Image (spheres, rainbow, N blue to C red):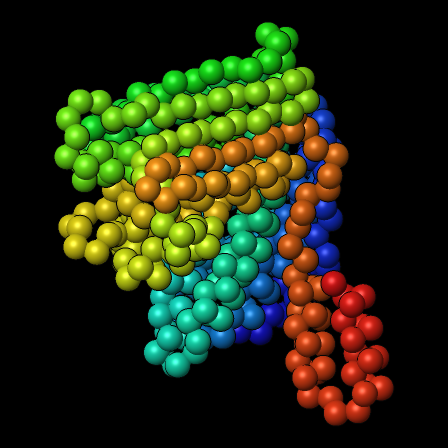
Length: 386
Ligand code: W6P
């Protein structure tokens, strides 16, 4: 599929990264609206061009449907009258809701196709992971810009809760996951939350929505591990509780979620951050919901497999200027560490598709050069393009 006209023009422009402080510092929707009118088409066109680089795209229905949404949104945003802009953004967000699932499912199908063509599995997996990381990172950027824009018409702080208590966010995530787990598991661990720091430090500016998402995702993994280990051990009584430790000052928060769910076997640990992890174990993704299906299980649950939850959570943490780490002791349990800053002056880490294309082309050229001068010159270009 060749890009033409406007789309080709916008795909050739680089997205402008904004720092989180800038995005969150805008107190009225007007300025953000004018930024979005300029910036969204550039980002959408870049994402379309990114999808178009995928070999065999024409056979991948899920990916094509997402591509179709992007190009429809591109036209809508370009043509929107200022007074209709909010509605366009709302419908844009609505349509994007299941993109993560469609893209992951689509890339699982794509990796199956590559496998039937004899492509080495590890290379395919690495490609899929970096491809999806780039797409999701740019998605998180657009999501933040558009959510902030909509939130600003309701409240001058937008998405930010300036006096956010991270313990409260953990407690409500724990409540939701506990209720959900009750429907699927015979034994559900208690969750203990403790706070370490001064009372003043308990109120810091955070985006509660993102914190909630990451904590809930981690808890789902812990609940499942604890429930399954408990069942397998044949133990009676209550399983070991989950412990959440929250430590913060006014600027940063560190969160530790500890489970005694039997840990992750050493050989699986490197795959935890892969979108293809469950597929690698021979699992299937449910066509309706996109949840991972375990082999032999009839229906998917929100607790099945790791799916997109963990890699996506880590991308969110990194986007917010923080990080997410897992430390797992096989046969014992897993500790998840989440670090977040109250606000980040770092620019959005946007995938730069223009540079990426140039880099790939140069790398291919370098492989075909024979003279050492040419290689040296191309290597210099390559280094500059990084
Ligand atoms: C596990 C596997 C896992 C992933 C993420 C967070 C917690 C846990 N616990 O056993």
